[in-house]
Image 1 (cartoon, rainbow over the protein chains, first blue to last red):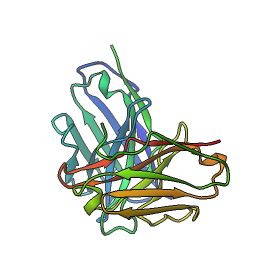
Image 2 (image 1 turned 60 degrees about the vertical axis):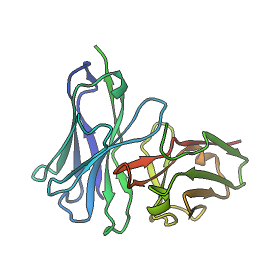
Image 3 (image 1 turned 45 degrees about the horizontal axis):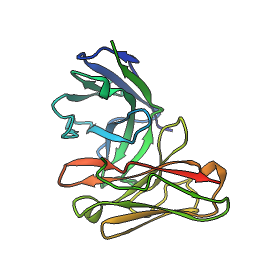
Image 4 (image 1 turned 90 degrees about the vertical axis):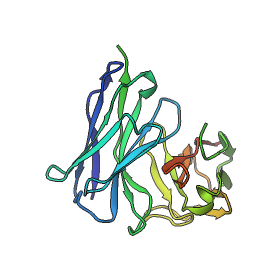
Length: 123
Length: 110
């Protein structure tokens, strides 16, 4: 059964870069029908899509975050990563990684989620 | 301000039925599939409905989805206390070129 697990620092200083990794286990990250994505949720607020990556390395970012976001993939380690630069307190949130089916997948949605990791931006 | 509009909260008694609305526009709901997610307190979101009205394996048929024009609706019948959660709608927005979510609706089973 495919599982996703986020990892990374829980505290980041303002103006620095937030770095998280999502490890995929129980299945392959190399797939022509799935994207691998990041979604975040500030405390007490709703969900915000950050971006997705395909196994080939093609990326899709939320325009509102695009200037600060980089998502990369390491198929040999079955991991994909998120980097968010120049963070402020507004970037404090629970960060989730998730699998998203493409239009060719059986389920065209975010069907498998990691448990999430809380990242606080504070000095 | 979310691109998709949901009521902040809904409530109903155990055993009753409730609906949660999700309103958008032609650039999102009107021309793309809608998904619904359930988020129990302190946990990650869980997919309930995809492609407007399909249920993943393991999701009971008490949960249903529908779409009409630029709005979508999640229905839950036979409410249980375990259904108390936040519910989010989501879809692709072709104008923004982004996945978008509603602001979430908190369901109380009184």
